[in-house]
Length: 167
Length: 108
Image 1 (cartoon, rainbow over the protein chains, first blue to last red):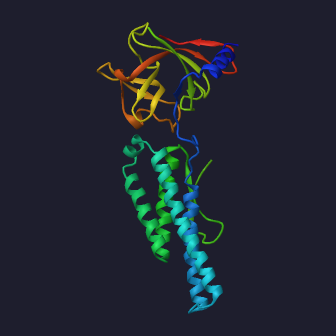
Image 2 (cartoon, rainbow over the protein chains, first blue to last red):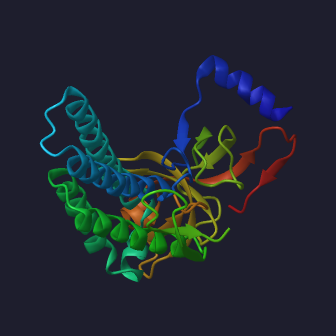
Image 3 (cartoon, rainbow over the protein chains, first blue to last red):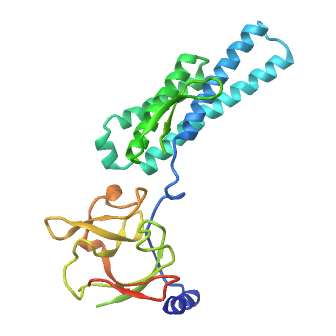
């Protein structure tokens, strides 16, 4: 009753709001997309390398078209990986977490540089290093959330190891 | 004592305070004096505006407070440090919840 009365009053005089602020979307943070991004980068490197191996010089329109698509996806997913990690690091990670995990800032920086290097090069080693750094980040993330993790091979190419929470 | 009726926006104090709840905040001098741990205060935080949070801890000087929300994602003293008494606009003395026709009087 009282709530409704005040709500009516609010509709006519606009009661001032006070923020019980949270970042939106509240609570929905998950490094999964970053991991998928890093896996995709490895997959694109594999596809690019096998395309070159099979088609040699590659002067056909089909070769150029496929190659352009692989490169575009590699670019996009390396950037997606960087973006997702930045959001979790900036919005979810708190000062106390940085104190508890002093390696976290360095790890995030490593992911940023590896993500950029993965865009600039066609280097499987770099792409795998990017995934490994993201996996390490995911392990810390789930530890902060109080969840255990496990490492399993992705059930699809490139079948590299990925960290999953045990829910 | 000045009283202000305010509307809660956001989920940082969920489930104690829900988005859309109304609160009545009493300005200084507070009816019961000092701010204590457990009080819910309304304060101005540069860069964030007018915020409502629960006092987690009163620092030794008695004039600064560590405030917190209930969510990991809450923006609170972990982000902006202690809140000084100069920033405090009021203490919440009445909470009008939605979908419940009961009022809850809080310690003042």
